[in-house]
Length: 246
Image 1 (cartoon, rainbow, N blue to C red):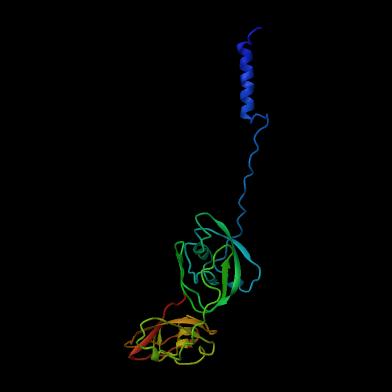
Image 2 (tube, rainbow, N blue to C red):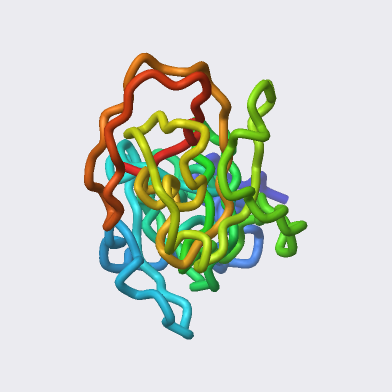
């Protein structure tokens, strides 16, 4: 019996290698489907306050550049005048790459707490008429918070208190009372009316945080947010509010 020639062996070897490369079946290996990212939605508005009351979720897109600036109030939910994309970064939904976020509109809250997360520091605030939260993000604030006690008419009885005092203003309490000063008020000023003057709350009331400070040599009156405060000379006790919105 003759040995097979070298040429014949080469042909057989090449055929075997070809079958091995194809998985031994003669068919090419199936490629796994590549999952495509959903297309980016339109860019998110800077704020969603104008969409307050919407029932349907709203999807839009954020970039890291859009999240670089703006103020955010709350820890999730956020007040609806917060910077949307910066809030999305705080919520952990936005990194270096653009992403879609879905916003759920929620009722206003009596207060919003400050929080630091993902390199974003948010601010606290009192009552506000509308909120929003993101789908897929954990809420940083409890849904039901214990109601703060009603604010006293003025802060004279709080004089000497070292810790900030959190209390609640009703709409009625914001409507009357005298105020002396601007930003720093005499401690016989109406707390809730001064809070409206300072821009901490609106006429519908809300929670405020009062800090007692030393008396001043003089107090300059001004008109702000529909409230006229008065000038005054030296007074032995004062108060201010922890936060004032831009």
